[in-house]
Length: 69
Image (tube, rainbow, N blue to C red; front, top):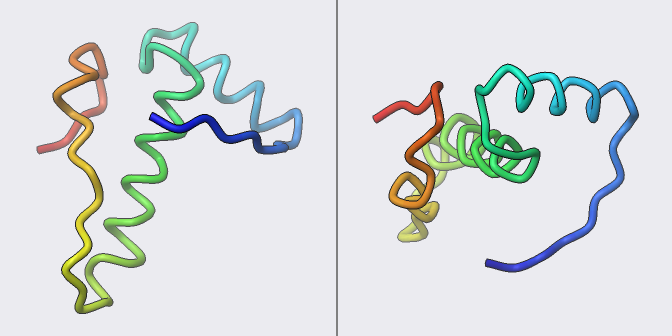
């Protein structure tokens, strides 16, 4: 995996931390990866004809509660 840095409003960080504390995600990074995957699926993949497919990350993150197929 690659490491990137982003800046987020403190409210977003608090939301991420709460979801991690509740056990919904293993880490902030995991929550952001899955949110990006869902964003891609909803806003890009369906509207674009492309051979690019978002990487399947489910194999590495078995402890996610809100995982879809």
